Length: 132
Image (cartoon, rainbow, N blue to C red):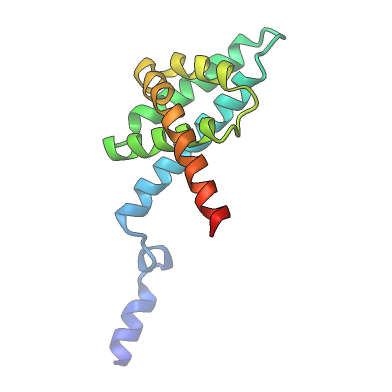
């Protein structure tokens, strides 16, 4: 047993506590959520100051992170974005959704189509919670 303990101590701490591959995938999804949140916040401000460079940077970052995701994580990101819009978390959904379509037209269309259905789900869930 003492020999096993010595072997564990020789192995660097980061290797001993290596996270499973699923956490790396979760990290990619979290990074995509952060990129899209920054992009949507900036888009919702509807930049009157004409800071096109900043908008292009955010759009590029959002696009890169979207395409780096697996198909499952893209679906999770789409659901997360839809919930953000349906819940009205973003200041101006119309402007933000228009800018979102600039990142990826298919993503924008999928979210646009799902917002009404998701709002109904949220209302039904809220009604169920208040009735209980």
